[in-house]
Amino acid sequence: MAFTLYALIQAVILGVNAVAVLHEERFLSKIGWSVDQNVGGFGEEPGIKIQLINLVRSVRTVMRVPLIAVNAVCIVLLLLFG
Amino acid sequence: MAYPAQSGFRQRKLQPKMRMRTTSTDGAEPSPLFEDTSAGPGAAGYSRGQDKGPGAYPAQTLLSDPMSNLAMAYGSSLASQGKEMVDKNLDRFIPISKLKYYFAVDTIYVGKKLGLLVFPYMHENWEVSYQQDTPVAPRFDINAPDLYIPVMGFITYVLVAGLALGTQNRFTPEILGMQASSALVWLIIEVLATLLSLYLVTVNTDLTTIDLVAFSGYKYVGMIVGVVAGLLFGRTGYYLTLLWCCVSIFVFMIRTLRLKILSEAAAEGVLVRGAKNQLRMYLTMSIAAAQPIFMYWLTFHLVR
Image (cartoon, rainbow over all chains, first blue to last red):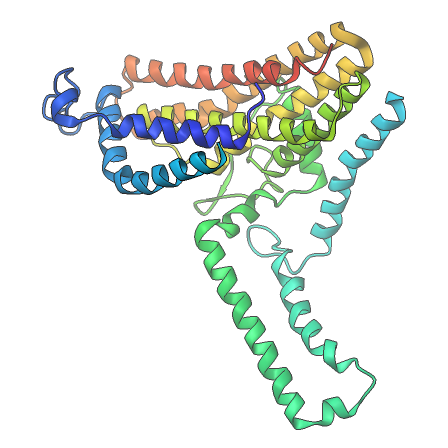
């Protein structure tokens, strides 16, 4: 209940790491969550599943490099300050 | 012991409104949307202050000396250049001009909006009026969202929480910081969840992130009223007023969000299919239902 901003930052980092680990080929295709299996029709509104798949893909594309830096900083800080 | 302290924070609650009114009425000439009272006198006074500073020294020779004149002029131009650079860079990260719109309020608007938040049942027209494609400033339209009430409500909530804990002898100064950061974290979580669900349901609205922060911040008013009633009248008073405020903020959110989220389908001319509209209705209901939950969650530990 007593949340600090630091707890929120930790939770966000863990969450984004979790999303970044989902491999397109090895995992998402196996459960039917890759883009080529879910081609929606043109001009139709994309459903929730397609939006989620797009979101996962964009998070992975955008956050891969910054996550390396953020995780390194996090590891160093946790080692130094516990 | 509660009574003088209560008038203390009531005064504090009234004071910001008074301060706001005086700064808004002696502002510069009215621009089309709202009086931008912050930049005008500030910028003019800045350079004047720079010149008056060294010039106010008793030695008149300081002014007549051409070298110091040059130095003064150079210094003031440097200062204004630096200020421009800071403003430009800051504007890239925090949209300051957009934020100013949300604080263009006056006392009448704040009073009416607070009344609307606790009693939204008589209000007929919930549409936000526009002026040439931009929304009208909150000063002129009661339905427009603002950030003044949420910010003041947040600060007052932290103070009231400290007061409530103090009456139970559970107060330490660190608790104020903890309450503030807890409430802030829940606000951020709520806004992120709302943004995520709006993205997933592909709603084309003009709801900006700041609008969502404003709407999520309106529940602090109900929380404050509930906790104050709990301090005055005990647990029954707290539960009754909290129930009333929960229902009214639920109705308020539904009536406000319905126009923003659900009307787009009809406005675009798309065939109104049942399933899509049903999803959006569920979304509106869940956003509105999250408000009473948070209101209870953030206040029940304050009233014993």
